[in-house]
Image (cartoon, rainbow, N blue to C red):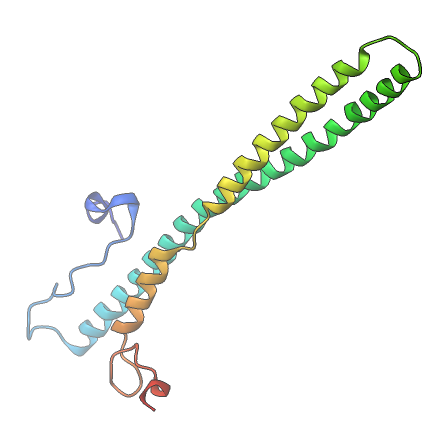
Amino acid sequence: MSNTHDNANTPGGSIPLRDADSLKRGDASIGDLVKNATTQVSTLVRSEIELAKTEVTEQVKKAGIGGGMFAAALVLLLLSLPPLTFMFAKLISMWMGTKTWDWFGFLIIFLVLLVLAIICALIGVIKVKAIRKPQRTMDSVSDLKLAVPQKNGELGGSNPLDRR
């Protein structure tokens, strides 16, 4: 089955549905109609799956970047602890009578690593907050439920419990 002509006008390479009225009125047998309906439902299901995969892939990428930034922030925070420890050690030795300024260099390194960790954490928060549920797929599937006939012959979407 070739979709090169069908995919030409559809964005993102989605799977288009064929025209529902591809057969002339009155010329189609029941078998042709069932075959047409089966093909269209199959194509619709495949297109919904493709839409869901596309939306979920985008969200997984955002989650991966956010998680990576949280990991980087954690590593940088852990790397900032030894300079803080050394800074306090030098500060204590200075109070004890040593006149060196080595502790100031350790403090600067600690502050730089701390700022980098904060920046990574903020980027991680922004990326994680940008994650959204696949709304287009959910809307499309709910529209599909409304179009599919139920056992009682009515169109979908009507819940028997809602009638009470």
